[in-house]
Image 1 (spheres, rainbow, N blue to C red):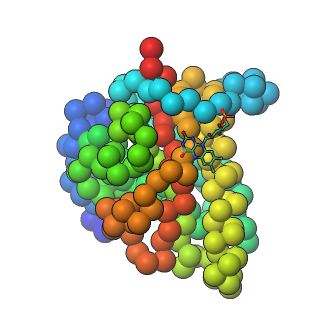
Image 2: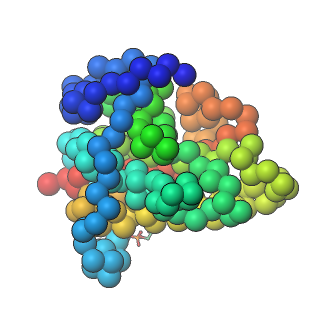
Length: 213
Ligand SMILES: Cc1cc2nc3c(=O)[nH]c(=O)nc-3n(C[C@H](O)[C@H](O)[C@H](O)COP(=O)(O)O)c2cc1C
């Protein structure tokens, strides 16, 4: 992987102008905020699926907080904000945005740009999926689930994605963002366009953005 680092300032450009980075560039995210936010019970009370989005992109701080909340590293031993069976940590989060597509790298807390194309029309069949600024695609890598049978790998991929998705829901509730998790995704097509390995499996999508006015 090209290790060239791009400056934080480019992130704003990336989100507003689209595509100033090259494939395989690593884009550090701002440090996530680890305190504050809405009290848990208020966030639980506001958690809901919303399906109407404005095109306004997320700020770098929101992207950082969202990804950290979803499946960031929250302990010195590398464990994460969401549990995973046998601590397999089998999920990668791919991001589909107007200006390109990325994968979240939790150790560096960074995005790795994988391509410039706007893949939003592959992110899901529902109309608003193509208009929202961000679609997360949760991808399970069976190669990381060592010692599990095929049935176990499928089962725990289906269970463990729920924790990540709920973290996204709670972050969005806390931040006043709109989100909906989606099972209606063309997994085979996404597998092709995201150039996934045979061991990787698309499980769910989740659309995120500012609520439409
Ligand atoms: C595994 C799963 C798959 C879902 N797939 C979709 C989907 O493809 N499209 C959609 O609009 N909503 C989808 N939803 C959202 C549900 O419709 C929603 O959670 C449900 O109606 C309850 O609403 P609430 O989340 O506001 O409580 C999905 C939810 C789950 C848990």
